Length: 205
Image (cartoon, rainbow, N blue to C red; front, top):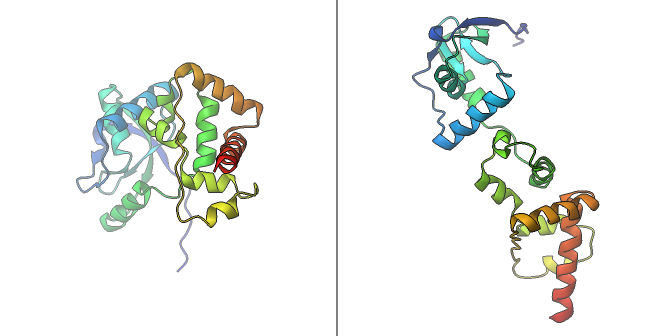
C-alpha cells in the first residue's frame, strides 16, 4: 500500500509540553550523558527531537531532553508528527535502534586525523576507552591489511591467528601520528608495519 509522503513539520514549543514516553526502552549511562552534554554545548542543538502532538509524547530524543532541561532551555525546535500510539511506539523503536555498522579502519583513521589537540576528543561522542579500543589492532585488521601483501595465504593456512596491540606514550603517539600522516593514513601504515613485523617473524622462525 502506498503512503503519501509528507513534508517535515518543525515547530518551536515549550519543553514543558514534551512528555517523555513512559515506555521508552532507550537508556544512557552517566558517561554517555556527559559526552552528549559536551556535544550540545560545543556544537549546539542541530538534530530536532521528534514529538507526537496527538499523544503529547516525545518519540525520540529523550537523553537530549534531559540535558536541555538541566541546561535551562525553555523552548526548542521539534519535528512534529500526528500518529496513533501504536505507530508512535513503532517509530520510537526505529529511531532509537542503532542501524548499520562501523568500518573500523576508516573510523580509526578519522579519529586519528581529529586528534590534533585542537579540541576535546569527547566531542566526537567517543570516550577515551572507546577510542583506545578502536585503535587496538586485532587479527581481523591484520587480515584486512594484508589482502594484497603476499602474507595472507600464509596466515590463512595457520591454525590460529594472533593479536597485535601497540601501546604508546603520549610523546611516541604523536610521533606515530606523523609517521601515519606521511604514509597516507592509518590504513596504509598498518599494512606497512604489519608486513615488516611478519617479515621479521618469518625470517627468524
